[in-house]
Length: 307
Image 1: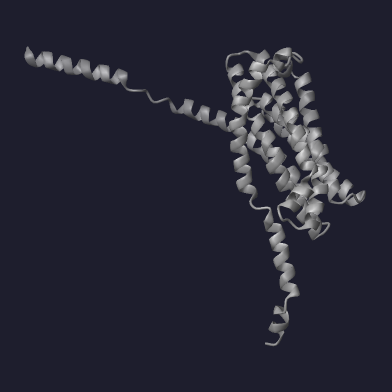
Image 2 (image 1 turned 180 degrees about the horizontal axis):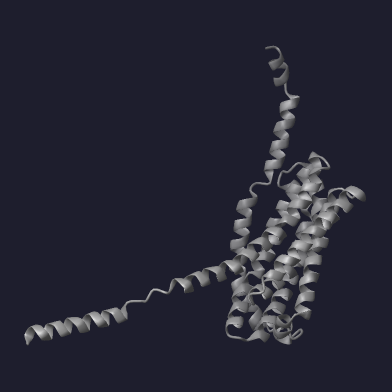
């Protein structure tokens, strides 16, 4: 009897232990989840690459104009990314949290409200950033940069100012759509924008002879074109009409603005640090040009000819 009781107790313990152990999900469910995540992440990666390619293409077209234009465009693009575009990118990242929570709770009308609040904040933030870009040449010269390169960079950065505000709107609309799992349209609009941008750079830089300033102007126009495409989609699509009921006064509530800034400021700081570390030292261009000029102006080539 005692052995039977112990056996039954052991069986009951084993059964309870089996119930407590977590069950592994079936492989079909894991594969479906992986495909779903890749289907959402891959278009976003492509969209980011296409949007980043706009400034790369502009610098490439400026590089065909000469060394000075290439140096000025490169420095201006780096300076604008650190002092302008990366700040707006970080400020807009707070929408991932607010829109994600609202979409998960099926409060679709709040998606538009959060986006409107972010648009207001980013547009206001763009004003002081625009002043910084307007005085890019003076700032670079004060940092010890080559005056000629700084002057060219200042002209390039000034034509990026209109695109700065478009970039802020683009970040808001992108997050408004991606939190609703609408990602394919982002790739399509970014692809069309890149194609237009290449043609704009060709016409403004080569045909109309605007130089590297035309390359910067093409960047600003392309950003606004991308914003217009996404705004039209939000206006005509069912998902857009469901989540965007028009401008609301709730977007101006000071309490909610403070809550948005509480998340946006740390996100902006992290994005700015990352962008600064990638950009590196602005003095690199000046030092490189100085070293090359010094090499050709020195007596080293004549000394080598003796041998």
